[in-house]
Image (tube, rainbow, N blue to C red; front, side, top):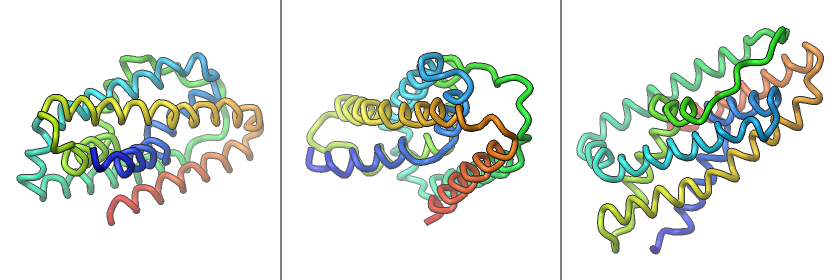
Amino acid sequence: MDDLMPLLTYCTLMSGTPGPNNMMLVASGAHHGYRRTLPAILGINAGGAVQTFVTCLGLGALFLAWPLAHTALKLAGTAYMLVLAWKLAGAPAAQDRPPAQMRFTHAALFQAVNPKSWIKAITLASVFMPTGLGLVQGALVVSALGAAVGFPCVSMWALFGTWIGRFLKSPARRRAFNAIMAASLAVLALMLLR
C-alpha cells in the first residue's frame, strides 16, 4: 500500500480530534472512569470498522457517483456538530447525578447517525482504498487500520475525561470546560466545510 502514511495520518486526525464520539467519551470518563468507559470505546471502534467496511464495499462508490450526496452529508454533518456544540456550550453546570454509562451496543450503533463517522468512512472508501487488493481484502485492510489507529486516539479522550473529572467539581469550572469543548467541536465542524 503506497498510501499507508496518509491513511494512518487521516485516521489519527479523524479519531483524535473533537467530535461527537470524543465528547461523549470525555463526559463518560469524567463521570465513570476509564474502565467503565471501555465498552463505549470498543463499541465506537467496532461500529466504525463495520461502517467503513460496508462503505468500502459499495456505499463509497455511490457517493463517488453522486458527489452532491457527499456534499449534502458533509453539510448535514457540519450542522449536526454545530448543534451539538451549541447544546454543550449551554449545558447546565449543576450535576445532580452522572449521565448513564454508555454501553458497547449503543456506542457501535451511534456510528450510523454520527456525521463525522460517515465522513471518515466515505473518505476512507473513496480516497484510501488500496488498488492492489481485491475489494473485500482492501475494505478489510482499511477498516482494520482505522480501528487500530482509532482505539488509542479515542482512549486518550476517555483518559482525559477521567483526569479532568477531578477538577470539575465547581459549576464555574464545568461551564468553562463545556465552553472549551463546545468551541473545539464548532471549529472542527467549520473545518469540515472546506
